[in-house]
Length: 130
Image (tube, rainbow, N blue to C red; front, side, top):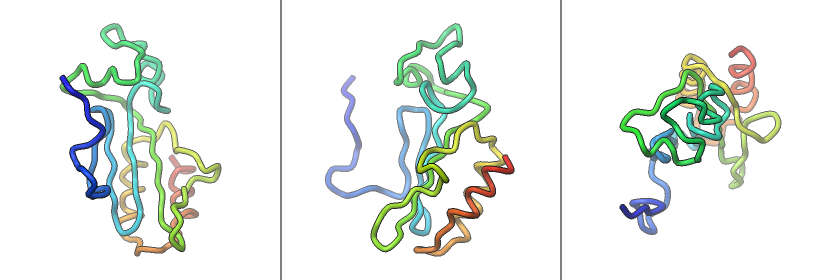
């Protein structure tokens, strides 16, 4: 099986994308949200460290399964501010161990934002209440 970086050749990033069967990203209203839940991500420890009986601890282990699951997810949200991509977390990092409810609230915030809006404070409030 050949593995290519993307199915899009020179067309830029699309509105939707997946990553190694363990997550996805979406571009919405000038903001990009990435939701990941695989080996190496800040998720349930048995998933993050490959501690499940039938799972290896390699980064791409999720590709061995038709369905890959976790109870928590790692989220990164970026937005464009004055032509520069800016991360929305307090420490310019990812939001780890997010519940499904937290991720849904992130989507609600992004969906109601306008391109160019600084949603940093709102996103961090959602995460802190997670």
